[in-house]
Image (tube, rainbow, N blue to C red; front, side, top):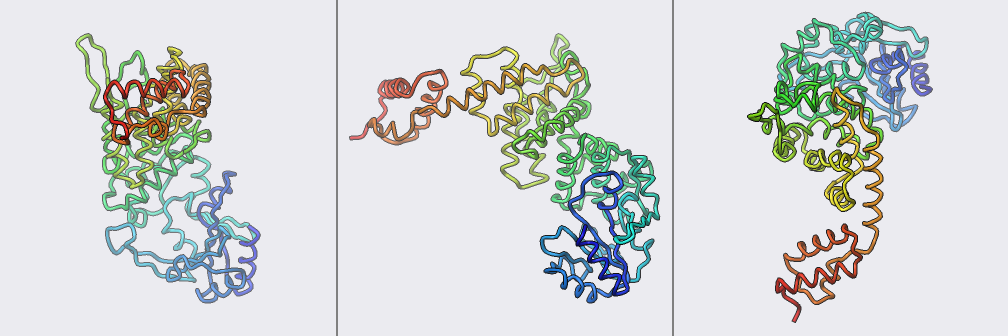
Length: 450
């Protein structure tokens, strides 16, 4: 903030006025931290502003033709008031012109929501609130500034949902209706993914993002696999909360309470969102009236990939989520029956991230309106995870051991090493495991080096 004040002082000396805008004003009113600081400078030509900034550090041109600058390593963006006019269907299709003499009203009219359209004088602290943003913030209400300018940017549909989740705010009826009427099919999927990630990682209840999109009838374009969960029944004995969509939303919110403990918070939250997609194809009504979804953790794998491929090309994230989907039911089952160590060792060996798998199993068990989560289950799983770590630290049979024993390398090596690992998980030491593997190789006439 000291640098922002220094900029404002020099701007004032040159005859201009510097105003905080956007999130930094909104977050200051709620007491939330804001890492990114946006300043808008009025009354100066772009060249004069650039000269001022050059005297304070290295100028980063983030959009010089649009009057947007930064100072290296400062976390501050400095912009000039501008007019925008849509020229096409894409998110980036705007004709932008800088106007240093634009009024506060005209400049703030292009912003999305009233809570983001407030300005605060950097030097005096005067709040300029022309659209009722402070009242909307206090009332936890997301309301758009202007019908025409809002509708020019379809990404604002997802921003409305994202802010609703992050702030625990209701979307005003008029804004909800306007969002429902907008065509979002031409948006960049990267931008949609970014808004979803903000909700998953920053909202106390990320379900608000998806519930808002459902109310707008905008799940269908980018989240059709998730939308398909709506109305899919579950066995009320185990899921009194309702359908698969409702369960998923509860799980996502439970996961949000645990994400600070996750090794990979984004992967963990995405896994919570996608873990039960398979129920849309696996759910069946049995002759005795029971509702089952046998094998949904496997049948859902292509659905998980399709849902995430629509939003991102991050292969690591997709494979992580699929691995979590595949295994998500096992930790609770093993914990409830207090299974033998071999079983939990095998489970954790299959997992790409055992720590996050344990957290997902907790969120899954908590995402239902019945008994509270049994803390003893997580304690058991964490104890067994430590056991797995200790076992993996002990000497194990390797491919080199098989070569040293005289076996020829080949495709059978993988099978033999897996067998050795299972013997290891059963408690056998390396010497005994190697002897047994070699005996089994001899019985199968595996080739030896000549």
